[in-house]
Length: 225
Image (tube, rainbow, N blue to C red; front, side):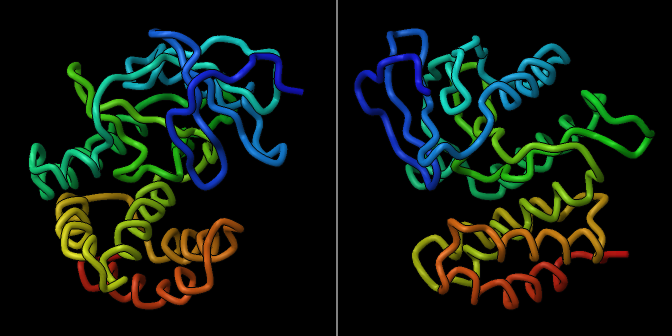
């Protein structure tokens, strides 16, 4: 059961709501009992200890409540739309964040190819603070092949790029920048990322129908094994 009374609402996502606690901390509350806040906090504390840019976290005593540092700044997407961050630079930042994350040793698993994966690293999960980008929403994190993490980010961007709306051109530019540098993305990893995205219960039917076109776009931009 939640243990921290929510304060002023700050925002809502597909699966959770965020509330102010005070000037330093916020509460993210998962809806419908979804998620494991303690496990997520453990991953965040681990990568932060290795220098990765994530908010500080503190225990909440609840499976659904994550108490974390209150960040100042727009999301990466908001910064791009406001013209304070170039679309191509945003894609390059996402690539750097993925590379830096995969340099962090795994928390539990062993093996030279096993790393912590965010699996939802996209422009709305990066906050551009005065001290640089910070990565939020680690609810999908697990350990495994870094190629899957690259594929997951590419699928989110490609899905937006083929949607045919006002965000399509920016997403296409970000995708190109993301895939410009060498990455561990493979065809096998892409297939798995597409499967997971299609099975995501927060995806609407129209979004799922874009996945085939998204896959074609990714394959046209990168050579996969």
